[in-house]
Image (cartoon, rainbow, N blue to C red; front, side, top):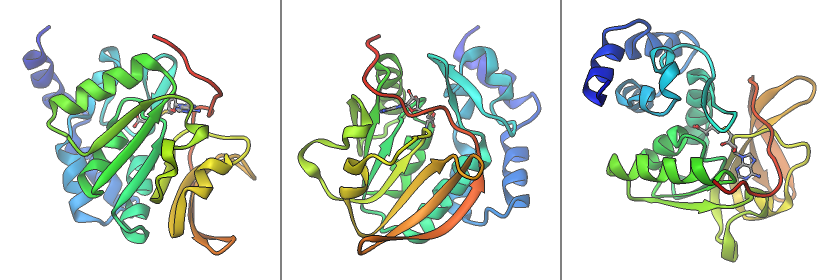
Length: 221
Ligand code: SAH
């Protein structure tokens, strides 16, 4: 099947991007530019082809290498927190995965730094976003727990995999008043948003969500 046929199939099969946007609105997502962007992004091109007919459903989906793209509401919530609270300068993303969240970050931030420990996913996401004309992203194949090289200071850090402890390299690269978004497991799996205030963290929001684990080391091809 050609990409053209696939596009036709996806736009003529339920659920569509417009249904997804309705659902996001129903769950309290209000940022119009974000909703317009998510409504126009070809989410079916970011998931494993066998699941592309489900790309606009309210569910996480496989993206290869046993990893998953978060369900649309989780992506929208994390993005809306950043748009509400963060200075949209430089953001660090840990867990490039399919590049879907990266693509959204690239629309709003001046510069995106993204790290992925699976070489295949790293290369695929890089090719995918380059072919979409995205050119304000720096991609790194590596263990994101070490942070970004050369201690570049970030306005925001978003971790899209569940850690058992918070890597110091990721909190110390955040500027004061910077925003941290990361999943936590206690008391139940959820995603949270915090602001760095001196040596304290002010919680700005949480929402139930599940994530694949943050793992050590790198996986070549
Ligand atoms: N944001 C992604 C979804 C990511 S799933 C998207 O929109 O598609 C989480 C990703 O984090 C997976 O691709 C996984 O390989 C990656 N990951 C897990 N531990 C990591 C680590 N220590 N460093 C970098 N990436 C990691």
